[in-house]
Figure (tube, protein in one colour):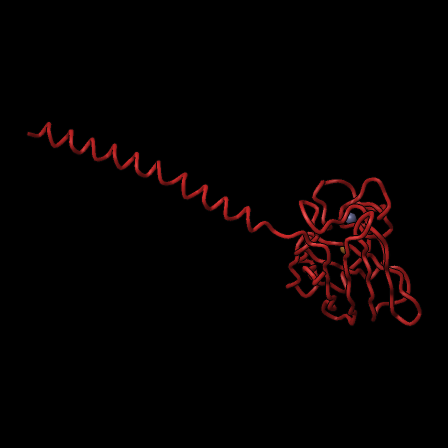
Amino acid sequence: MRKKIFVWNGMLAAILLIVTQACAPKSGQQNNAGMEKMATPEVTKAVCVLKPTEGNDVTGTVTFTKVDGGIEVVADVKGLTPGKHGFHVHEYGDISSPDGKSAGGHFNPENVNHGGPDAAVRHVGDLGNIEVGADSTGHYQRVDKMVKLNGPHSVIGRAIIVHSGEDDLTSQPTGAAGPRVAEGVIGIARP
Ligand code: CU
Ligand code: ZN
């Protein structure tokens, strides 16, 4: 009698195992198929609204637009001292700290050295400098080959930082551009 119960229990366990194994992969496949249908559309435009860090008065807007040959970056800023100001994409879209340091270092997915925007070796985030005139406004416009709006080099969700000083394009790891005076998070824009 004991032996019979043991056999029955064993059979029940075996049936349960078969049922769970048969069902689990099926529902997984259905989920995957559903996700493929809902593939993320390609991002072709992004925008970043700059706000000043604590003690500064810098504002501005940066746009990223997919064009032939790369991503066109256009920035307009005001409230900066005349001269060149380091202008980069930093790793994290976290602008919660008053000094802008929560945005982390330059966006550098390939783990290479800092450089100028036209250098062969550079951080993806190395956009160089934005030049500001006597009227304290600055305009930046160039087509970048390394910044992307999709994939592992995508800058979406990361931060733009404008610095108080000039990026010398050679000092490691940041170009010695000084404190952070403006910051903003890069988000998807209406195409
Ligand atoms: Cu920077
Ligand atoms: Zn850099």
